[in-house]
Image (cartoon, rainbow over all chains, first blue to last red; front, side, top):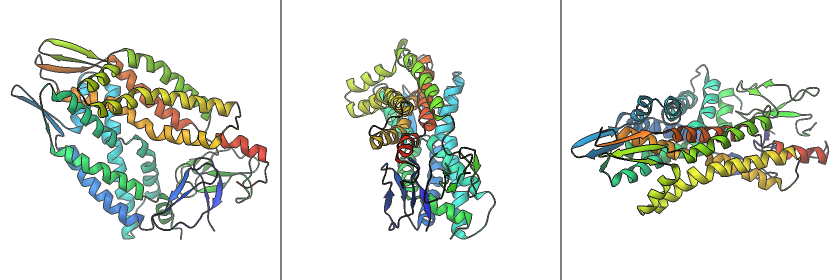
Length: 199
Length: 215
């Protein structure tokens, strides 16, 4: 018998049996208790490896090119932050850097660091600390919002000049559903048990 | 003091790994260390109501200049145009992009103020020890937490435009004052939502039920 708590209302209950792929909700407040994915480590590991490759592509290549009267500018993830810095908007630049580069990179990198050794049965130091950071970075990782931002910016510029989508844009388009699937399939409780060596 | 029969005394829950542990009987609100993940554990988020209120007031103050001042200035062949959040939405509607316009309108104008109002309402309801529709209030908080991030859209749009359009006199986009306030509103409302502890909604009901009622 294992006791779990509701994150939203703090009710404590005996952990109910939930079949694979199912979810348990709190009786009192209706909040999600957990989603059960018994193969969470294998599935998430695969998804995060794919996400890491796509994230690298999304960072290395331009996502939009802008052509006007023979002149072309391209923009990558970092060049947005740099342009804001050039105009002296350091706080906004820091925020954009944090939410579109630093947080997703930490989330993906640390997840790899946690899931790979757990998957292969190797013991590495600092797994608990790394997984704690994953949980804390997640709310500040906003790649999916950035994708909508690209679409809106593209529409606004379409009248003015020619807009050419770059490779990174397609990488984004694939990265967002893969990241969403990874967070949906992540059964954090099971990962914590494996890290802590619980049965 | 609230007792959890399954744990046998007051309990605390790790905010990170969600392990449920016993809290010391005599000082249940003392901070603990989580034995599983090492995070520091408080039964309730410390000073939740005061912090949430402070962030909300700050967000409300920034909301005014965020909407009044232009967020960017675009220059094209000598013609300069300053755009506020609302004029950006109007532009999308005029160019027939009403689905995108609606997304931006909801994300940039409706969501921030709706977040401030609903979190303010939640704080007030907890302060007044309200017992009114706790499930609906819990659901309100859940939605507030979920949608807040989408307000960042306009910050990203300005970032991308600034990065793309810098062709000197031919075409140029600059960030303006309003964007800083707008970004501040988004961050402050996210911090406000993070500071609010939804468990406070239920505490008053538990106290009334008495210490031996199972939840």
